[in-house]
Length: 179
Image (cartoon, rainbow, N blue to C red; front, side, top):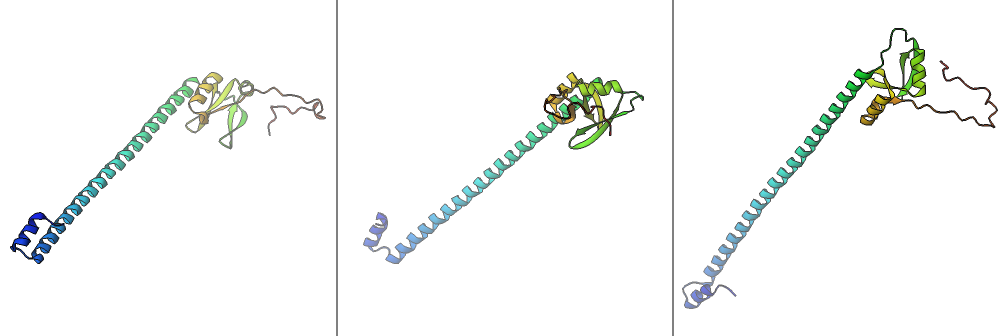
């Protein structure tokens, strides 16, 4: 099943069987080298395309992170502006220490009696700005809480339910007890 032209040359006696085999092996080797060459070129192209795709994905992820950071920075600046414009000024007469919990730490803020009552009633919230705490009205505190709930502490006024079977119902602990 060889080449028809080679068979004719062989029958005519112009070439020998060895020459035909040698020519066949040479053509076979050339075909193999060509296929290897194409495979290596294809592999290199695939590797280059994969590297480009990986870099594009990495760049997209970095851009997404930068956009998120810029968004968080803008929200933080907006919260800072809300706090600075709407904070309740406290005078030097604020000598009562009001303790509260924020981020699993007990913090304190100095208030007067009127401010303390407003905090307990839920009319004021405590907002954190640049490492310190300021008092803001409840409306502003709710706006801040919508943007970043870690920056605000709201105190809900809870009505105390008295249990009829409680033997200590007559002895209520005052909510202004300081330790």
